[in-house]
Image (cartoon, rainbow, N blue to C red; front, side, top):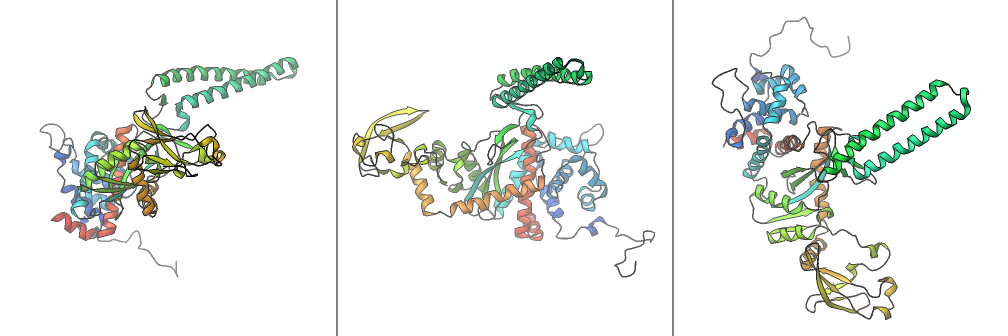
Length: 478
């Protein structure tokens, strides 16, 4: 149409370039994928069928399949069926695979059969980042995020959920029985169809009770008293919103504070972060190849034994202490209002009294020291301090380690801002790529493989953004 940019006539004969190479620019990220995979020792990483079979139909080279998957996750095409379509229409994929087009089952089986090896590929790229001096700062931020599993909330049961579900069914049955009684009193004035509908509803609800009781028995026999019907490894996890939660997995990540690369990650079905600090810090230190490491995390990781294990290993931890004091919440003095004097082994209360050491005991495997004074009953501040005869202060035998961590945070209050801007960005980016449904696979090993591919794609994009494709290709060629 006149006045608009005109396209080429579909009937016009054209001469396309004779080589696929001419369609892929020198700075195309697909070239980085190609060189990276070609440099890997797939046999050492644990891939199956690296050597071709002597008999039978030849299979696809694992390098080709790995390149296809990395390309897919780099371009938000994680589905095996969608990757199959891309093999037929995407010039970049044709260039990468040599115009091979495996079917979706072959593509999906490769990810399923090589899960552990694919996770090792993710680590291999981190090793490449270390070689490129992108992890020179021995500092990481650790965080965890919940990812949805292929399991609806209605298909997950805990003791509390089961109790609420059965209570709702009982109320519904009672309501329908009441309506039946009312219909009986009205006799023929009530249509037979309505009576039949009420009876059918009651029958279905009674069948549902039998079904739920069977699930309940299986749930109570499980180790954590929880069961998921679609993905057996998925677990119900609380999220930051009030009375909200998802059925999914908890992904832990250690992100370097300089370039925001994910140096270590782990996929778990444990909803809480409190026992993950030392594990993730050690993984990060190993991947970065350093002896000393600085770690910043949020208050969800504050646990005495975990922090002490980090300090003993030469890992410097900075994180805030959760405010769980019931006294502080009720307007009274909290433990932080009492000052410990190490030389005298006493606490000074807000009124200036000394609380000496009294005795020690063991609680949940930890040695706890108790401090109090007998003059509380005559103190003018007693109402603001305690409701009991005296205020008692508890001190863990390694409390000095926690105090050192708090002092470190007090001297560097920007550490929490650094943590937030470092660790939360990768999770938000990856979730955006994955879409609303998050994981496509089921069971923990397969989900861990899928997460490793997402992390690999994220790290590769970050490195390309930092260095450029040309510099990355040159570094990999050395």
